Length: 262
Image (cartoon, rainbow, N blue to C red; front, side):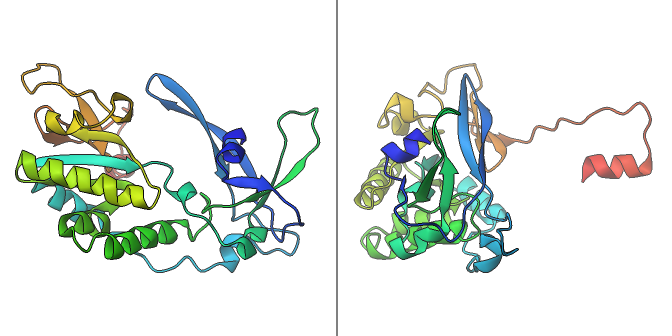
C-alpha cells in the first residue's frame, strides 16, 4: 500500500466515500522472488446490500479470442511478447467517481485506520478490463495512424489487457516494430516489460531486468521457456508445449476420467 501512495495511485481521502472496497494481500511466488499484491473485492455488498460491481456496467467485450491471437502469433518468423507495466494503475479515474473507490488501511496495528481514495482503474472492479483495452484502442487510433503494424499489435494482438504478442518476418522489421511500439506507448506514460523473444537481437535492445529470460544464442542446448497466454513457449527452438499435471488416481472411473480430461 505504501507503493500505491508513493506512486500517486491512491491518496488520503478528504471526504467520506460512497463505497468501501474490501481488500487483502496475497503472496505470489514469482520464480526466485516472493511478491505480495493487493486483491480488491468490489463484489462485496455494502450496507445497502448493493456492491460496486453490481451497480456498474462492465462495458462491451473488446478482448480478442485467445485462439485467434495465438494463431496470428505463430505466423511471425521473428516474434516477441511483452507486458505493459502496471497497466490498470496507469489509467486515472475522474475525481468525481473516486468516491466509489475508497479503502481503509493502516501501516501497523498500532496506527489509526486511514480512509484512502483509489485514483486509478482498480483490479477487481468489473469495468477494469474494458477500460484498459479501450485506452489501448484509443492510443492505437491516435498515435498509431502512421504505424499500421503497431496499431494492429495494440488492437488485435493484446490479451488480458496488457500482454502484447507480435512480430514480423524479418529481424529488421521486428526491431523497427519493437522500437515504434515502445515509443507510442511511452507517449501515454506506458512502459513495456517482461520481454521475451525467439530472436536474440530484440532482447539486446531491452534492459536485462525488463526481460523474462536473458538473450542467448540459438546454439545453446539448454531449453529456455516462457509462458504465452498459458502455453509454454520454448524460445530457443521456437515451439509451444502444453504441460499437464494430472493427479494419478488408484482407481479410475468414467466420471473421474472425464473430470481429468476436461
